[in-house]
Image (tube, rainbow, N blue to C red):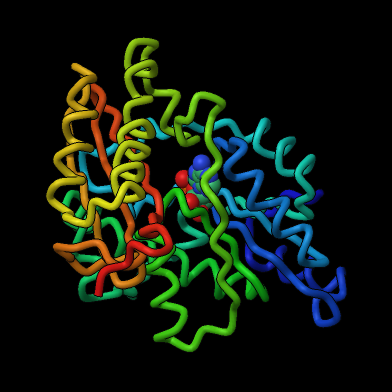
Length: 289
Ligand code: AMP
């Protein structure tokens, strides 16, 4: 596996590896890899000749006061995990390589997709994400790119950007990987102290509770949200940012569940903000039109 820091070196590597005759999969990450990231790398490897993983903690998607400076980093371990999962290249550019002097272009998806959920709590976040994903896709020029359902809103926004800009890349959205006890894997889980870690299980439990209600035939969004909220408040350290049930593809608000929905939650434990979500379909026979 090669470790590459510049676009020039990346292009040489790609030429040397007969890029024009091979399929290329790309997995963008911010590093501090866990099984969630590795599942994307393995999926990319299973479906492409070559796989590039990027590790870049993107400053433009963090607002002042967020955790950019203390975002966890462990490059040596990331290299080893990437190699073992099948990556051919870890692309680890410096900030100046991604945003050279005078970089003045931003890419923003507008509308409902970015104006809900994390878009409300982190108003500049998704513009930073779509800008950097655009730049990275232009640098790497993969055939396929892999994102996780863990960041469901991000995946939908990137899907929209790829479609709107006719970008020549196939998007793959891979399932959420969880710890054995149900907590969605996240690089930020290391911030949690043992008590917060214990209570953080309430995210998944509350989502399961919501799903259970929908499967029992509850279609009133407010009723399900209320039940999820009651579950989360059982954890005394939990501070709810949002609990939402939205139309699964457009993220538009709904009152009644009669098609697939996204149940998404964001909850803070101390300084750590965790997100989780699930796509939920009303069960056969209970669709009401
Ligand atoms: P990040 O390093 O947090 O920017 O994440 C890089 C990619 O890994 C994104 O597409 C995430 O959605 C995905 N990812 C993060 N956590 C998980 C997880 N638990 N399961 C699946 N994919 C994940």
